[in-house]
Length: 107
Image (cartoon, rainbow, N blue to C red):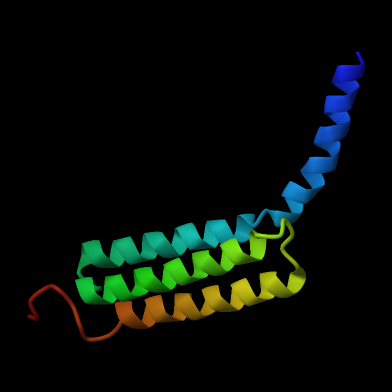
């Protein structure tokens, strides 16, 4: 019985830390942006070079997220920084998808 209550106490202490380091919005947005890049490649709106550049930007945002989570807590300032980085990446995706470069022949 003591073992069960000790395990419950340990879980109660760990869960708030895990919840503080969770970034579901960042993860969801990251997945959406990744899907936008893939859709752009499939439709011909993005060249392979553009897609590679955008993938590097996505990797940078992921690195920022990993660094923010490293201490077990993502602060409001870190969340704001991640949001700004994702906003910037989203604008890049839009501009690259809507420029004149395509992989389809013009006509």
